[in-house]
Image (cartoon, rainbow, N blue to C red; front, side, top):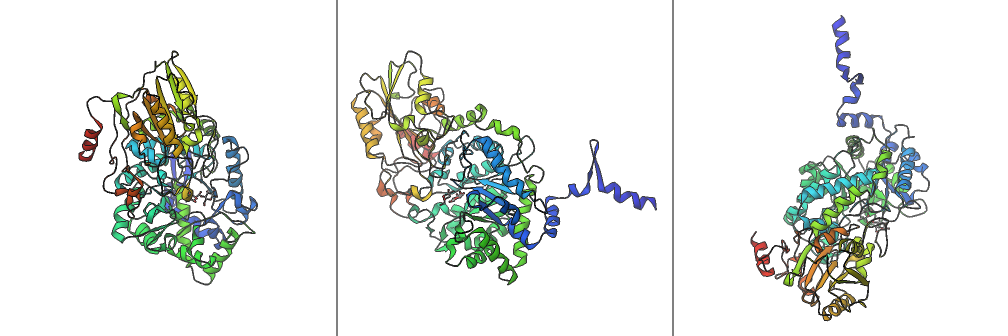
Length: 618
Ligand code: BGC
Ligand code: BGC
């Protein structure tokens, strides 16, 4: 009968404009993932579970040979000149290999875009999360992530290892600046906002995949030791560290990175209860779990056992920075996992679940449709429009700690404005770690961007003479002095400190400025509160600028009063080092110098003390 013949056909096609779309393309992402999975061999499946650092790949053709699912650039794995157009070609060259495989499953290229697409020369660098926390502004945090996504996609990359949703408790931890706050609620709000911002489709419809990290309690380790051990019962884990992941899942997170750290002595990468039962089960996380950098290697001395433990615990993709000739390299991983499946130590169902999750994320972000970047986006990397968003973040993140005699805002018509301190003209210090290189460095680290000194020169009137001397040899005849000091760049464990006092030279410079007898404004670049000692009172005004990134004009917007300071501390500010030494949650020591929520404005009438009290009772 004609009707029974026609009907199925009518269901199989749908008119969209003038074109006919086959029903197979209208299938749900989940059924597409299942259909693809059904076609895959074990080799193809295991390949999807492998992520290799580009620097470890023996040859790009290994992507094709082993059906590799993902490649990353760690902190130092950049193409030769590190420019956006080169990155685009670089990322595409790996994708080309993936697209030559039998099933043409595109690979995900991943990068640590944690404050802008920070590895790439000329990309806009945003304030680190410690600064974004002080903004208390989810809408702006989302826009910042959206700009980062555009700069990631612009160089052919589809996956950003952020936001970091650590709820850092002990500021001796070298990654404190990657944490928005010690308050789970604030971290949840800002983390979710950034995931939504990051995963907002770009103009061509493509979406960059976010990756909240590091699950779980990376910021809760004893004494703030990086990759250390968090102590406490499960209620503590759930109340303090889990909320941002609940919010992340609700915001649509499709990938999450597991933490190097341990809980009560057990490595997170082997913790089936937290990875599978709690995150995937209870929280309903449908995305995939990626390991941290060679992190499964830390489970024990035998790599094959480590693979078994982590995959059975719920890990879906392993980040592997080693290639042939090195221990625990990607070929070992592939061969070992194959054998583990063959001998039943890792169930086939676990492999299928892992691969289904990875495929689902790839389908949902539109990777099959857009495996290569829209080349138009590359010209937007570091664009004025993107820089304007970062500048907004800078001025909203600045926290005014002290402002005696209304020293700030400064007049733009001072006769002689003296600027001192190495930090004032150092983009690298302004940006901190995870900038161009893993650890970051001092000096002119990137093209574009504005140091504080340059921004000051642009902001003042033509009647004002601005002089600069890093050591403060120009104090004679000053109308006012701006002192810029701060921490040297660092990342991860290299930033762990037990003493958070200002550097001796920085304190001496502030003292020297004070002796000149004119108003002194101190601007501090740091990844966390510092122990200020006498330097606070020696400064008539004191500004915590965190690690603001490339857009120094955001600082002068506040210093010269074009913008009201509105930043509020997102964590307590300790009085001295002894407050850091007590317990796991050392930052909650009894009497901080400034409480969370503290931050002055230029509005008349309120004294520092009154504001401090007001903030507590808000
Ligand atoms: C860090 C991660 C980062 C990864 C890749 C690790 O050492 O802990 O945050 O995403 O390296 O660079
Ligand atoms: C890499 C980083 C990585 C770190 C881990 C560095 O060599 O560049 O990306 O996070 O090692 O220790």
